[in-house]
Image (cartoon, rainbow, N blue to C red; front, side, top):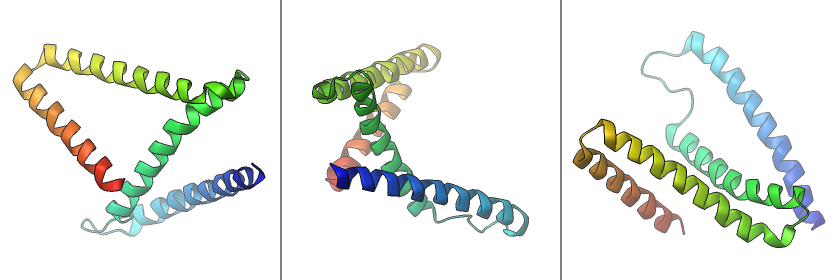
Length: 124
């Protein structure tokens, strides 16, 4: 357990440093970048963002369970959190379908689901 605690503390320190470096680079680059240059490599930045998102979605229910002194319920909390997100996304999807052509929205939705599941299977 202490090893995980140390990793969390080190990652927190590193994330804070990465945040500072990105903001610093953005300030400098805003003045010096040419229109066709990138601030950071898009694929690296996307991979980093995806890793942060996945970690956030795991850490959030763990934090809730710890705050409630119910660590045994972490998996249950994680499932509840995921289901809430699915509910929220489906509600937004339903709202979009009411405003746009339902066939277009459904095609976009299914294409995105396919893209996400294919990416998830490739990452596994």
